Amino acid sequence: MELKDQILQTKERKKGFLNAMPESTRTQIDTYTKLDRISGKAWTVIVCGAVLALIGYLFACLAKDDSRWVVNLIPAALLIAVGVVAAICIRSIASKAKKAISLGAPDYVEELTAINARLVGLERAEKVRQEAEKQEAKAKARAEAAQRDAELALQRQQEVTQSASIVQNVPQPAPETVPVPPAPAETPVPPVSPEE
Image (cartoon, rainbow, N blue to C red; front, side):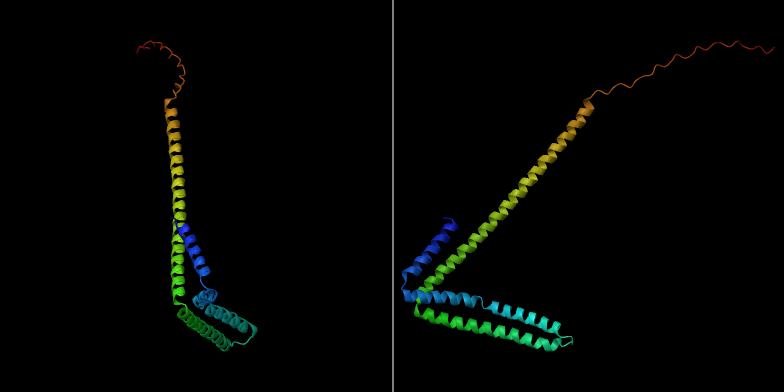
């Protein structure tokens, strides 16, 4: 069975599980789910506090001409500290509420946790599979491009060797010979006698 089918079946199972429980329990489970998300994302409060502190610090430093950057740093540090305390409080309150709900409906919470864990695992496996398919497609495209390049190089090499063999097989025209005129016959010179 493919992962997509398993993911769809798990989602259907979760939906059926939530629809099968009594209304009051479903409300508790929905609250539990929302509290779980909130406690998991409590760190965003710290990040928001830090960003606001940085922006406020920069505006405070730019607004005044005197160099009171240390004084301006105090409110920024306080804002970051407030963000950290707020995140800790949110997380603590959410975990206490989750614990209270899980004590009220332990079987439902355990079943929902198991379904969610299975769903998360399947979705991660699907992402890994999709990433592997992408990598395989990229590798296949690179291999095809390398194959095309090799075929082109082979074709060019064959063209070069064919042109070289054609040049070698073409009969070369004989160099034109210029007729050499016959050398003039040497006329014998009469010997000169010493008496003259």
